[in-house]
Length: 211
Image (cartoon, rainbow, N blue to C red; front, side, top):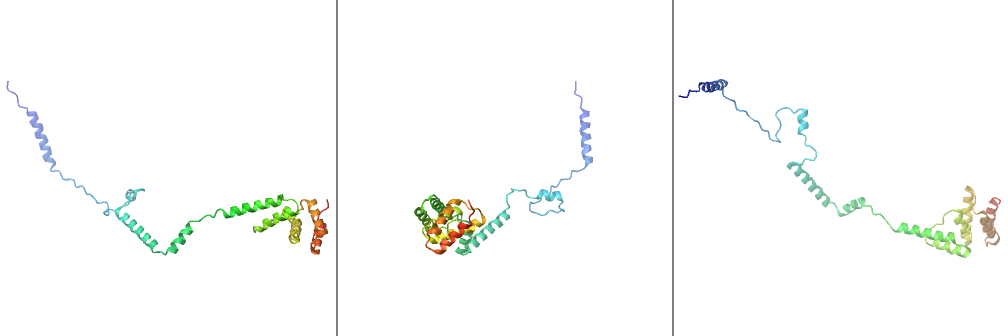
């Protein structure tokens, strides 16, 4: 039996062919590419500006890297052209050298000598301790306890200074170690060589409160 021709398939192919012919030729699609650095032809909008902004951490372009390198070289050349004295002064202004040793040691020595003076007993020991303290260039504190020790010094000039300081101190604060102070003033009043010393000691003793 002879095979029958497939007319239906030819008719479908012809129909498709006829449809393509009616549609006409297909126009090519043109894709326009823009270089990254070239200006845009259209007016940029706010969204375009935000999208084109370079985010943080993005590497510099070649032009920006060259500009930064040239600025760095110019700064180095300027620094080298400055006089050595000016560079040294600027470095000293930036670096502060802390002086250590001398002030701390001096204060330790002062406190040590002052402690020895306050622990001394008897006119001879007190006089030696005061002389050792003053020999280091220190000034005796204007405190009642220290000036009370100074009253026992063999040098009447130093004892007279103690009386003057005690007059000022007692005027603003009550006297301390009142029995000891009265006893030492009485000794100066009775046995001092200078008349002015005896008079100053007697006057201060009469100003002390009773008790």
